[in-house]
Image (cartoon, rainbow, N blue to C red):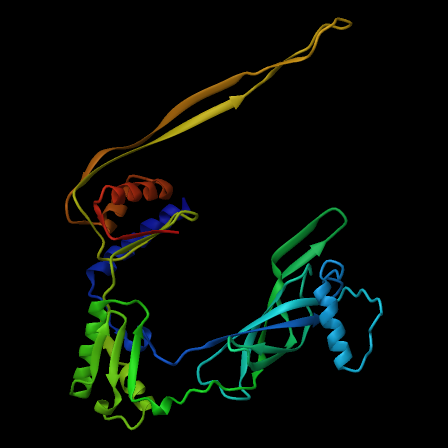
Length: 369
């Protein structure tokens, strides 16, 4: 019932919003500057100081191996020794190196257990090098892990809330190497659209050329706009980006309907249209019940116990929507509003939209999640 009320309110707001003119968006919110990107980092480390929730070393021998290596680097010889601590856990450490990160900057890291540790709560990550795709070390991580869950266990039951085997370390890694990229030497700026569209790319080209007063921007394809920095009159590429990224453009997007079957959520664009189509919907409920009958022989009599199957089957048809005609040119938001007024459940509404799309009457990209 709450979901139905939410959908009703949502589409009322949607109808009001679709009447208003589309809002302009800054270029910086529509594109990525070619070359200005982050890089993924990954490392293999050890979390210590756990309260008996670490790896079982018999099930995770790699934990014992890395622990031995760390102790030997610290001058402790453990060769041939038998130690089975439960307060250590092997983890994978991931991070993202932002564009233009400089040596000494600090970045956030995510720590995830890879063994059979039950919780990383309260643990401390030991110094862990973080490598990029080229195999070079770009950062080193260390610090106290902030786990995102709680786990409690008794003799006969256990309860877990969240994910205690993963956590984060805010500003837990320090950048040790910079990515070699000289932004000042660029002569051409390439703007990559996050959602490629020919119309949007053409509008970006037009707005930039109008701003600089000459033909500095050129649309290469639906996802790329090239800008000649010499024609912009900017003293540097950075100044050119500052002058261009805050220009406003009205983006154009494909008509699209997104459906989440698990939650019954339906999201659509304002340009979705439906051709003339007739809709009829009803629900069938099939019920099958098994009630086997056991027949046993009389006392002291020869015979075997026999199970006689008994099945009760039936089909019930619930009232649905009679044959209704949707006129041509009707927007999908109007159809949804009408279905909501008839009390159609979100699940049935999704089935109706699938059928309309299969009939070729729904003119939009239909995505089911």
